[in-house]
Amino acid sequence: MIVVIVIAGALMAAGAVGAIWRIVKGPSALDRIIASDVLIATAIIAIGAEMAVNRHTDTLPVMLGLALFGILGSVSVARFMSSRDDT
Image (tube, rainbow, N blue to C red; front, side, top):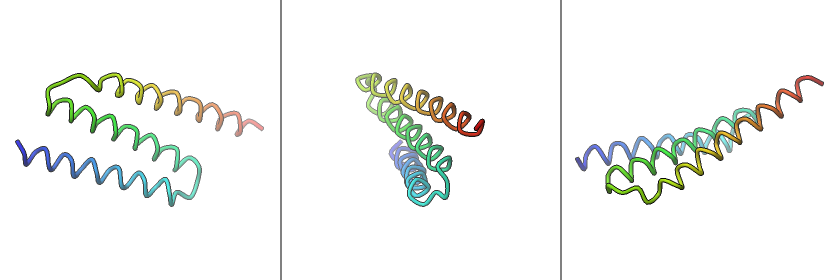
């Protein structure tokens, strides 16, 4: 079980580092926005994995808040980009 936890943690860390790298080096604003969505999704997955390993639901509101933040952020950016393309 420990091996699976370590491998999952390493993969989540690699995903987070890749997203942070794209946020820093992204050539366009859309690259940075997508990378921030990936980073939020990685944080939600990490919190969910921690909840599964420790068998509790204490951080469920944090997951829901992050999911709401990710959805609202994506929708608002999409609306901003679509209105910017219309002009």
